Length: 465
Image (cartoon, rainbow, N blue to C red; front, side):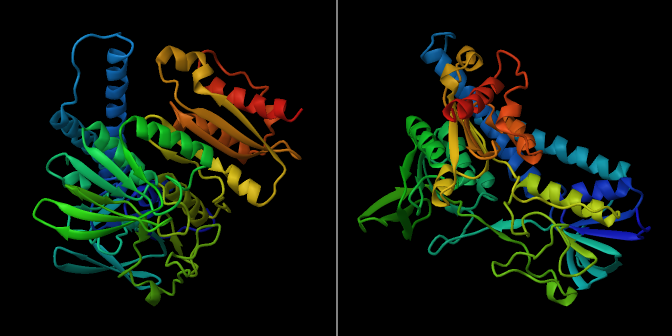
């Protein structure tokens, strides 16, 4: 540490905020962590953790049901007890938040529940339960996260039209659910409610479902969703025509030929992205600049336009993921401690959960074609893997995009069981500039899903002559 800072104040207690708080407190600094809602942020309380709790158990149920019906491995009826699943979900959240609070106590992090606003670059006003107090700070980290976006005619009412933040408060599973937006949030909730028995329709204004994906992976996803009975409407704009006490009437308009269709739903979930929480923070008073999209400008060290103020997570213009936030927060913390660390925003893996899982890193094949890159694509199917056959989880493939000139990985795309775990071998490889030739000489245990990655890498070399 280059010099002893007296006080660190962190605004926002999500993955960015609490990782920074614990790291700096362990280094012996005086750390105050402020959040107007709860420790753990969106991720722990209403985002990643509750969603994945549902998805993991629904996927397990679906696999068990298919094994019963198709393979005749089990006898008798099997169904989901929704109340028990929700109780388990609540227990998971409670245990994790309790663990986080103990971590704060153990490391002497002062957690303040209240709304924070910058008065200057070294002073924060905190309002809690009608009381106001000023806190001085030598260094400040802003990690206030993001909020769901809405779209015209679909204003949130927390009953018929909801966001991903509010969908947990729906008292019962809707018979007919419309999801607008087919990004990771939309796809995950489509899987959740489909598994719980809803008739789900997903409307997407762009040409392809989940347009951030490599097209080949998107096509595999589409086949999987359709097999589950989920209705997909790409190239479709949506508009609310009317609402009653318990129904919403929606008009779909094709962006291809302007054809119109009207359907009625019990609920609509809007999943079209999230906006950075930068309002009412006093950023202008502190001299903090925003980019044209409204995100906080940061350097590679995660410093804002003000030398002693740092930012991490969804308020920065990087993929809005919990692991983006925690990594940025750790880098900001290390730089506060006098180290010189840089954030590489090109090495962020993304995942979509449920079955089959999806994980990806780097460029898509379409992007490589657009820039006329010299590359080879290697593929291997889960269907041909021993572990996948044994488990009955044979849907999907691994696709590796290799630079023909350097032998390095340009992109990695996985759809199938354990994709969210398999991607990390490729993250490490890309981060350390490993060539495909070097990776294929590492031994992969048998029988494992990791062999699918190995086979896809070997396919790159075979295709390359």
